[in-house]
Image 1 (cartoon, rainbow, N blue to C red):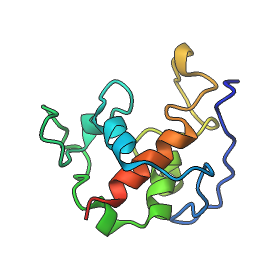
Image 2: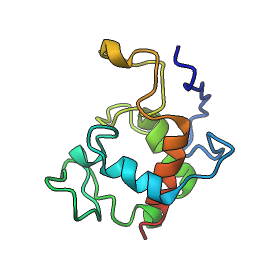
Image 3: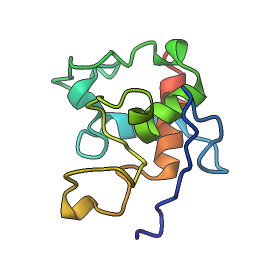
Image 4: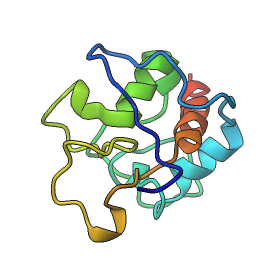
Length: 129
């Protein structure tokens, strides 16, 4: 198991209130993660207020206004494992390791995003009012 992977115990609600790290998320790093198509894949399905990124998705809600629609705790659960809200979602479980199917060998036993990256993305999305 990847040393940076963290086990997250979820209680099924619509949110995950406790931060995954003791270090607060960084808005600039979070924006960078969202904009980086090869790291997060966010803009494959979502569009957002990132004019420098071409060919943004339209399969999922726009990220514009995400901070007004969801609390940080709600955003955290959606990023960690959105299957807890909608078992049929096509959104990847960015920080879950169990219950996954058809995981490529390079990604087995490690989350897509680290705990700090999750907190950084939440910090960025929270600014999108």
